Image (cartoon, rainbow, N blue to C red; front, side, top):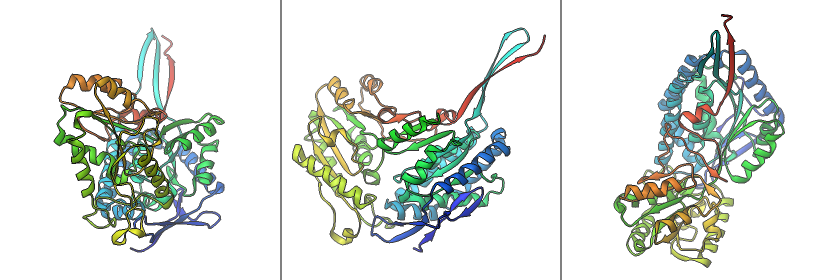
Length: 483
């Protein structure tokens, strides 16, 4: 596929970085060059933020929900019309199988369509506090929002965060992940097809986190930062944002427990357990990386899971038969291999635990699906987010023990419980310290449903009504009618 060159989007104009510097993006499947993007610096961020500020203050965007709805709806339609091209770009930059890339694009469009409708539902309240005196609570857009997205699901997480910000009346500056900038900017290029979209409402600067990302976090004209990323990045954003009292919304890492009781529908639970950890090569914040399994299932359910994991077909992202892609980079691969070695030393290896190299896979960053059984609770493979195709199985005898295991990490992003006994399942689900608790399903990440973290998995919520309301301020208006 032809190497694409992308540019920053500033006030409706596509432009190179001021310094003329670029970055190159390579396919994780084979190391081939696929994109060139700007390497932006402070001056580029300043221009983008100034454009967003001008659009927020001078355009009618913040006060015209009908326009916002129409523009978002048109953007979603443009994405759908160009889905195959966008999916190809997404697959080449992330390495994820093309079918997973198509799924991500459809998910992304779902968020745009949902918030296109929600843009016209933003309302406040009013109360007659005494004769002639009316108290009104109005919701207003927070202002200029910096949206910082990761590389694992770059388009879905872009639209999950940017679409509600735009629906609420904010203007945005996007800083996409360096590894997946091209496919993200390709989605923004579709704005050229929507004349009604005011210039400056959406801006984008590509670059490295330590330069462009840091500049956005520090910028005094940015009112809010919405970040999906790792724990250390989130902590750094919070510290920086404190200097200018920015609003901050963070979705960070996870070490999510998937609890399966012996009385569950095991035929249903099995494919969910497999996809929960091995989709996108395990590179997902809500990945079910800890299978908390009732002890009696070790000799029955676990062999079936092992068999299905070993059937996954690694390969090039554009092959329709590929079901397991590479991890994103050599650095990520090396980190995961270190975790695998530690897991082998402290637990029973059920399958995997090595790099895949045969059949041309040595050109990419492929890892065998890996399962460990019963490492100690304080092991790094249990406590830390690996972000790769590595599953830890922990066994239990009672629901109280299952709950203690599930809540036994510093993270609290997602969780699941499987049981035909709904009373038992709900007893556990209500006590899980996680922002999402799925019962007899997993990873139901829908536009209508709020997600977000407890503990070190972040703050605030994405999706649903709460996902739009967080981009608003509440203003109290007191009106004296002089009666």
